[in-house]
Each structure stands twice: as C-alpha cells, then as structure tokens.
Length: 161
Image (cartoon, rainbow, N blue to C red; front, top):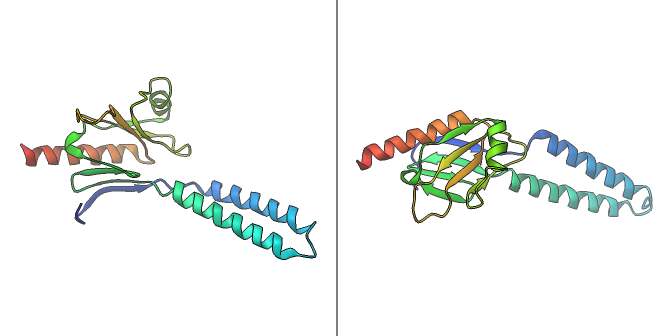
C-alpha cells in the first residue's frame, strides 16, 4: 500500500470513562496497600506504577484498532482486503448492530466490534476464496465510513472495467 490520499481513517479509542474508572480502581488499590504498608510505601508505589502501566498498555492496544480506506484497500484492525472483493457497505444503527452481531450473526463473519461503539458497518465479501461472508466493523461514523468504502469500490470498478 502506498502513501497516497486516505479516503477514511478512524481509530476506535476507548472512551474517557474507561480511563477514569481504571484510574479510580488503581487509586483504590494504592490506598489499600499504602495503609498497611506505611513503613514501606515504595511497595504501594511500585504496585501502583505497574498497574498504571498495564492499564495504559491495555487501553492503547485495545483502543488502537484502526479502520482505514485507502489505495483500494480496506483495513480493519489487523485484517485487510482489496475493495474489489467487497459488496455494497451498509451503515447500521445500534439496534441493527445488536441484531447482526447477535441472533442473526454468521459464525464465519469477521468482526471488529467494540462494546463502547454501538453502531457499525456491514461489508459483504464477494471473494469466493474468503470464508467470511461479511465483515462487521464498529464505527463512530458509520455513514461516512460506508460511503468511503462504497466510493472506493466504485473507483476500483471504474478503473478495472
């Protein structure tokens, strides 16, 4: 993939409340350790520092998933596929996302879902060699994301026709 213009890019960062809740939990652990270990507070500080590092690593890794449409490719997390193998992308609201990821789900589908992002985009896969019938991708801006995918598909078909 070359570095030409990106049609769409989104990072599925964890919400601020996850950072706040994690920090409050770590503060509680610190308090629970510093009181009984008041003669050796470095233990509480070391444990707190380690927990902060682990929380930061988790939040940045889990919230680091990216959705990118660029150069005729769709990238979703670690997965990538050429847009020539895609059907028309469909933006889904929260209710449709729950339905498609729940009772109407296909076990072969590729899912990149985050619990803090309620809407998604469903992208059918038209590649006979790919076992996944569709990709279901969380997005904070599903209409813009689906539009970028569909525009890239139209552009690829226009140049390949």
